[in-house]
Image (cartoon, rainbow, N blue to C red; front, top):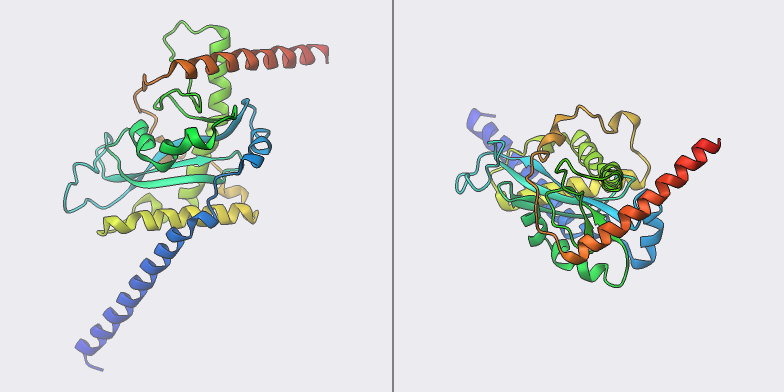
Length: 274
């Protein structure tokens, strides 16, 4: 076989493999609802029992997925960390399973903007209408009746507010652990060397589906668990505080802080008794 014929055959094989890869990831994306499912209303109560934060059914956050510098509009995909990426937003349960995923947004967008443009952000009030359940977010998100965020730390927080922030942070940690597991298990997400921007969400959603699949099968190994020094989870720590808070959201947050404080005093009393 001459050199030209051999190269032609190799390129043909590589082309077929790439085509199969793109078709497979597109199929996963189109069928992702089978593996990444928003819980039914009947399941809300059993999920919130997995949290130590009242009425929580999930923690929401975003992470950056690094990509090759796009040929066009690369400045839109360049974030404050000065690298190109798309944003992955997800909601996680305490067992690290995703119940909602949205991706493909340029990483220059603020987390609150990503949430507002996502299907979840547009429909959350409907999904939780008539229930006391909420999602947990960090200070980048707006405070609403369906999404709780910490009290701004202005140096004058009282004990009830400090306790609220502490408990919320402990419970919101689940989504960061989910991102860490996702990137440690599917290491290609640390850098996607792809020119087809419209196909990048397919690859990310495929990894999220496989992430849920191994969790549902109980195949997560101890070495796959979150490590505090995992630098891939440091991307969003510098998000500025969003002051988009509703009056009704503040009222619910205040009620929950006193509820949490009553739990705190009860547990302290039990400890002293023992």
